[in-house]
Length: 299
Image 1 (tube, rainbow, N blue to C red):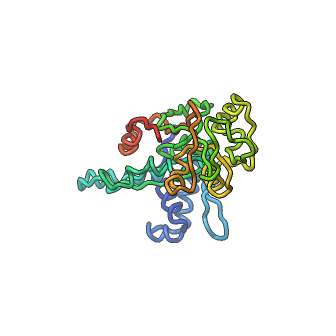
Image 2: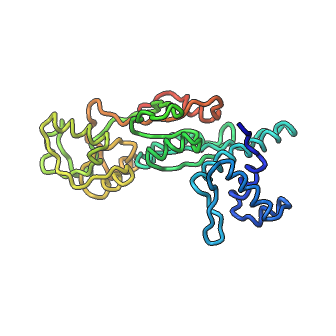
Image 3: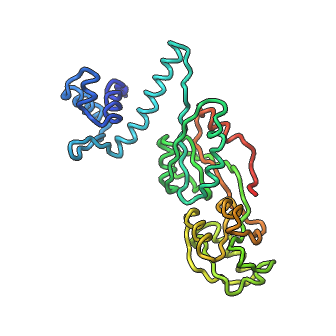
């Protein structure tokens, strides 16, 4: 099998990062035609186009984006290695890429990355990307992310190349949340007749847990609205005057300000927060430190 030509990959990487063939050709002291020819050879090697032209601008194709992600790692690490060997200079920053499930609590995500914001230890830059689960796992398999945060159970991997590793990071009880003047009695369902609810969608794990709790007590909630997105559910709980079922971390600011009240916790029902990774020989040290923290009970 022929080896990848890293000169071609380097030229592609520079053009993809710059977005302008002319500027890169000038900086490399090459003609535009020569630079284009080198990139075409890489495309022939890959068997797919890596760029498409739109209004005189080069735009990466899907395959081009994948190649660029790898090239970014290869040449950035190469520059760091050269600095370390020649000048004994450790890289100033570690760059960590974290994918997050778009529907999960932003408050939990902020709590997870809190050590990165404190400025202690190695300098770290991080990027957060909110996506659906399928896109997150696809990006993880393509090494776009160092880890993924999710609050749903991990589906089985259909590919032997993607042997997901899932680690439980934290969990929080599910609570009945509402405006202070709702004032239902406890225990559930006493005093809840005639009250309206804003709830997670019917396929959400938290909704299924609440539905089971209602069935146990022969209670049928009057549902005003449904939302899978925790940020949207937080706003509905805050502004609708209806009750909701949420982990308290989602509405911690509203609880602290007295705009919402936690009336009671559902017994033995938790929202779980997971870190999903792929087996790697070299895990960034800062990621290992984040994952090494003990399991937290969020209260």
